[in-house]
Image 1: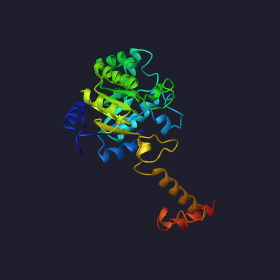
Image 2 (image 1 turned 180 degrees about the vertical axis):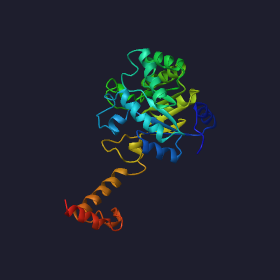
Image 3 (image 1 turned 90 degrees about the vertical axis):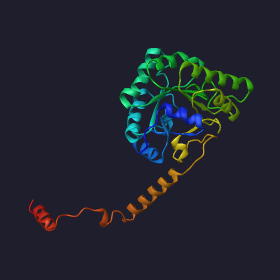
Image 4 (image 1 turned 90 degrees about the horizontal axis):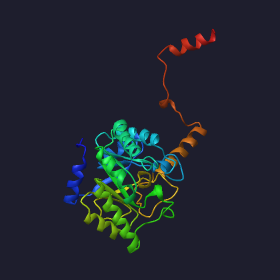
Length: 283
């Protein structure tokens, strides 16, 4: 099993031009699959609100849910760099609360870092969490937790003026002490500019191929989540189709009396069936 990467490894990968591979994971088996596949990093994302719980967005997700899933992911991928995602209102209300909740990911789940959304406006929180000795990944561009202010889940930085704002957010995140940053749903030209002008590793989810690495929501990548598919997603398999077909076959076999067969059943020890039937007859 390869040695688990640390933040310094990701800096070296950026210098070498080696792309960083990054997926979300929300449970033990998915984390096992990801580690076996050789992922560099895993994000226990608040996207689990939609992908696991069926919420309409990420806003309802709370810290205890994130901790519960992060614990499972860590158990499934003990040799992979795992990042816990700070849910809505786990860091916005005070610096003390931000540090406390960030610390929970490390103390209770053995995560390697945390991620939080926002640029200039969360600089104080980033500084406070970094000062507590925690590795921070920033997140700018489309920030789902504040998508209401953006008019919905829409691409950002598509005009010169809005692109400049995304760049300013990214620079502010780095200046605050974050050691990685995620860019979401921005044009590749903007992603390239930020990647070229930041010293920290820059990850993309819908920010083009010029970034230092790529993130996808695992439920999108394997075809498990069907409510909607963002433009930047490439589906690598169709797990939902496989699962539905398997369940249909199960239903058909049970209805037809074809399952279970003898090979699926336990057998009594030789001679015990006769004793059992005699015993029951006498009761």
